[in-house]
Image 1 (cartoon, rainbow, N blue to C red):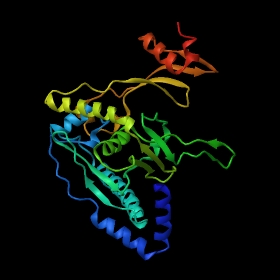
Image 2: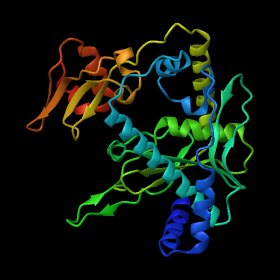
Image 3: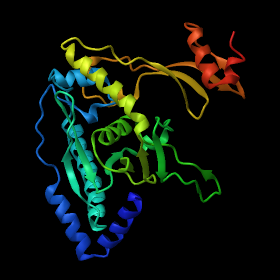
Image 4: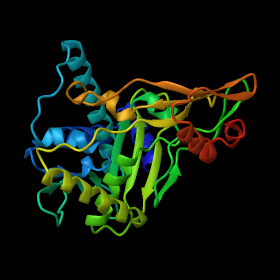
Amino acid sequence: MNVLTLVDEFLIAYRDADTRAIACWKYIADQALPPKERDPLRLYLSDLGKCPRQVAYRNLETEKDRRSSQSESNDRFMFHMADQVECTVAAAVLYADKLEAFQNGVAIDRENWGGRTDIETAEEVIEVKSVRSNSFNYDNALLPGVTLEYGLEPYVKPNGELVRPNIAIKDAHAYQAGAYGKYGSHPKDPIVVVYDRGGSNTPQQYRIGPEIHPTIDDQMNRLELVRGYLPTLPNKLPKVLKERSYGKRVVQEPDWRCSYCDYKVTCSPDLSKSEWASLEQGSWRWRKKADIDALATFAHENLPELSKVLP
């Protein structure tokens, strides 16, 4: 199923004031945002791929960082837009006469776990993810079992430049949808559709195969260990070496999730960045002498041309 095409067809009909399209939207909107009961020690399929320390803070009912009223208002609007995207996809599937369930609970044979699918058809589960526009700036590696189906066709800019869009699906998205395939009974593997909330990037559709199931088991076991050792907290996320700025710098960066965490002040991760090497006048020059072995390992695996100039 090409969900992206179904959504486009639905939006055309909706803008043309098609009465059936309007009725589908109203039906979904009336069901949206069902009440959610939150057990503090309950783990959720949406926790898979998240920072274990963040999950532990939530289990311990740690007070979230204080936010300005403006930030809270922005968040409400952001989550509202995410709900609108999800409702639009569900209404499009209903308009195509394929909707079987919306916001349906998942039975999980593990103690105190929960999950809720976004959309179900007779054949598959559809997980809807809406992300910030900058999420499309980074090219993520696909996990085992994850394949791109639609939305990555190269396009030509007005100046003639050929552009290949980046892989935008996050690991957590794939784990969550893969768990629906692991614990569900649909004949086809689940789908993840990723939409840019700002509308600047082409949406993408991925299929999540059973090859990801062993990794999901590992993720669930890890989170159960975290819960079992509370109130002891797991370690903070480590900083890693990454290539940045159009391939012209190697920097040590904190995990990107730390910048968006609700417990950033409480956790106090090291958010500083340090430059280890840079590409200057066509040649790589190494800068960081504190741990040359780490830079050498990174260069060997990612930038062979840098490893040639290392001592």
